[in-house]
Length: 399
Ligand code: PMP
Ligand code: GLN
Image (tube, rainbow, N blue to C red; front, side, top):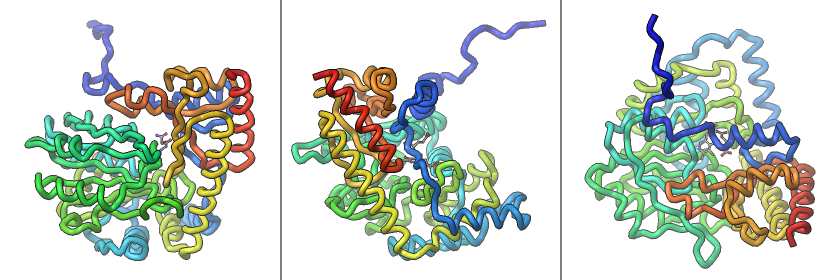
């Protein structure tokens, strides 16, 4: 009998990726009993109409493989929702595919479009699955850094963005509203991205899972890149139900775009998961059809929680960058004696019973985010109050 060599069997391109920071920090929260403001998941359920529709689908035999692109009712609802909110028209039978969350849509899009060695322009800090999906494809990421400017907003240097494009660029991966910074890209910023995509004749993949979480005091409202002149035909627009309907465990996402791009994604996706979550798909269709009041109420609710957490963090001594959207706020730990966000977050549960996420793990240039940490405010008000009380005690100890 031969024995296999005792080396890491993982392919080299995936070795730089350890356990995701979200899994690590949620496990730490469970182990220490800390308040978990790390991983972005809500601690209350989504709309009751959606939950009832899921239960009904389970009971009425909608439990076998759905069609490859997703159940027709959901594709129709995704199309109607995009027309209603963003004035974008997609054919539900040819231009929309349902995926296992936005995560699969992102992975399948990159795997479908990138040859090994192709380059992907993205903005750092980036959502962790981007780097892994780019690596799985054997592609190369070209990050452009978002940094807080003098007005307290995250911004990028247009020259760095221009320089990131080159002969090997295949696509731009854009997340707006942006996790973890809470930035909403402005019309001018989007126009520059669109101009460069067209100048270099590349695709755009847009991650818009926080499309309904742009707060009323944001500098701009949410504008899908696909809506800009010349962009629809080169953009794959991605979203999912997890955030908008507080059901992150359901993993129902979708990708919309011109037929030839969506069909390329489907040809990859069919061999990743084939299909997913049959009884949850009609339920998400119900949720997407809820009246406008659901969507504004959801945003207003999260905006109140943002205000509560931002005020609490400021009170506890953090330098806070108030987000324009998403579930998250980033804070600088320097004023609390922190020099490194990873160290700060690893010790925070022991020191005061709160879990946050260090954002430096989302940068290729960790220096740019060395002292920044991310707190999630998609939690019940009493949970946020408890977390803030604990952080204030910590500030008392360190002063
Ligand atoms: N993109 C971003 C920016 C996210 O924050 C998340 C986490 N919800 C995802 C994608 C993944 O979404 P899903 O859970 O639908 O796969
Ligand atoms: N999107 C969530 C966040 O950013 C978590 C997703 C995950 O755990 N992979 O916190």
